[in-house]
Image (cartoon, rainbow, N blue to C red; front, top):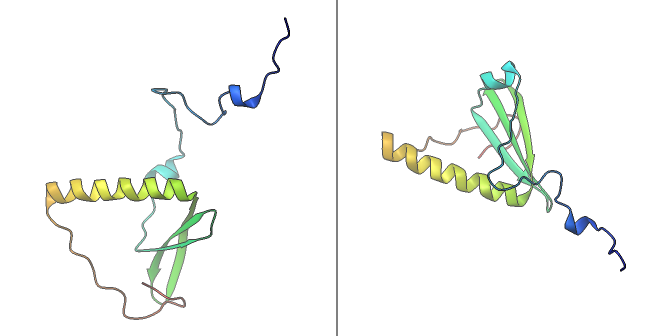
Length: 110
């Protein structure tokens, strides 16, 4: 009897988790404290979305974090944000949108 060659198709991808498998995620204390951002800017290429979070206090601004995700993951993030905003508004009332900044900070805003 001839044994079939083993292929990568039959092996689970190392990053794929099995259903109901718990994944333990660790974080440094600095990361757990969080970072304040009063501005976010989103850009994209065909392969990825880039979200920059910054703290802007004119005349200066500081880029605090840059998150790069796949288009599919971006769509899941947007859905999760929509669901959380809906739950927030059910609990605390409607969120009023703030006005857009009336000037540029060395780059286009809005």
